[in-house]
Length: 106
Image (cartoon, rainbow, N blue to C red; front, side, top):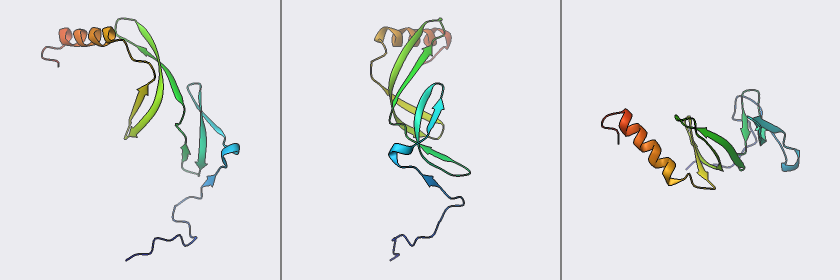
């Protein structure tokens, strides 16, 4: 059985600087600030424990402001749990639009 205790050697290609909570620099993406947890020459780790605010622009020119928490990131996809529902009417409008435009769309 392998002993998984830390032996003090660096196992990564690049050294990481880990910041104490009160000293974390900010990463700003489209006006939103995120706490950087650690950095290295080739990467950063940052906290997504914040509210994401965005605007959805629909095909008919209508816009909807949304906000929520990022709950999952996998590959290049991000899942956000919205704090306020998108109106059911908007969902129906989108579904009707796609069904009319693409035969057999479900």
